Amino acid sequence: MLGGLYEVLLSSDESNGEATVMQMTMPAGMGPPAHVHRRVVETVYVVEGTLTLHVDGKKLECGPGSLIRIPADKLEHFEPTSKLRVVVTYEPGGIDKFFAEAGEPAQRREIPPAPTSPPDVDRLTKLGARYGLEIQTSA
Image (tube, rainbow, N blue to C red; front, side, top):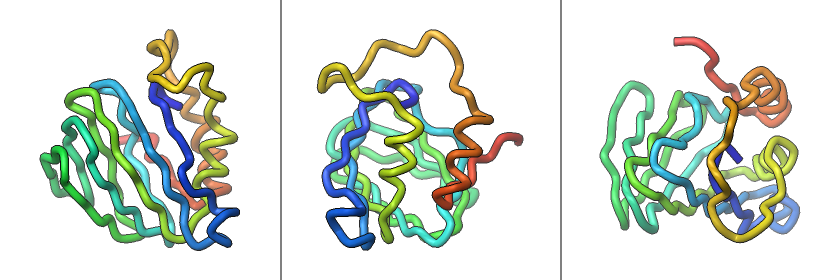
């Protein structure tokens, strides 16, 4: 997904819809576009690497051991500034279904080769809307 390896550790089906827990490993510079999770609280734990996190107009520099809780309905995005591995919890769950539909199955349990073309933002925006994820498509 978007040049990274996104692994579901706890699916929304396994948690009766209460949560989705994912591990995301991505190279520097390959973070998601600005977006809002409607009615979903997101908690990000940095396992390794560094990132710049933008939440509701605020900028945070994060490294290993950082734990950030992002309230529902806040505009956010992050930029990995090095190879990054995070564990992200979404409450309630369901976003795993978006990632399954929007991404491609990994061939190996490693960061895939860099994408050769930009992501289809229109497709991702339409898919995201079905799962309460609003992707910002303009500045």
